[in-house]
Image: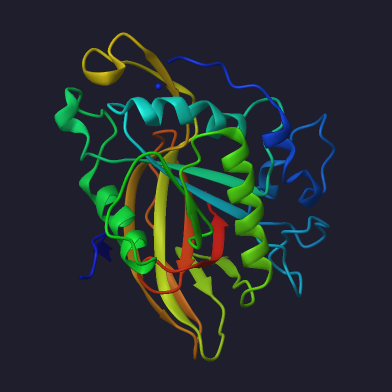
Length: 274
């Protein structure tokens, strides 16, 4: 199991709005009631009729939104409310997951990001290289590992999600995971290959008071902050493979396992696993 590495801005209260309803048509649960815990990606009971049920012949893809931002950047702070609106209570969409990566390259502006990790700088650079970019910036949003943009306004973020879902629906088949004792098994798929990643994130809303830098004096709300990212291994589609998962030790974190085509490539498998 390998550590992740590359190969080569004021307080807002999130509210449910158009953004939070954008993917509602994918959900099999009424908007007035929260989905049961099993509905969020995986696992599902055998009799589940949810459209993201992992045992369906053609499962609908969840939407994975990876956000790269910094507590020390004023531009990042202005984009945060739109991301939070996707997670707003009382009914978060079970088919969408925002992963909030905090980068470190803005720490020189005067505030050291309390959730920053250089590994997340590297992940953002992986996307930049894969997409032919010569620089990285915040805020940045990557949808399904395939479509990127700033996500700095509600309309821009809505457009990125729609474009990302369209690209995913036109792409290759979605790969499925099966939870087994001690780990997760990736199904066989000839001609496919990728890296299996484990992401641990904090699903709770946190408030951070910024003491210095561009956002000095502001209180930022954050949610789904990524706390750990690691490569479980490489998957080659000619055979099934089981990847070992470690226990999450009662620290309130949740986990998603991603299957990604190469370094910085499209995501074509995702499972939320306790």
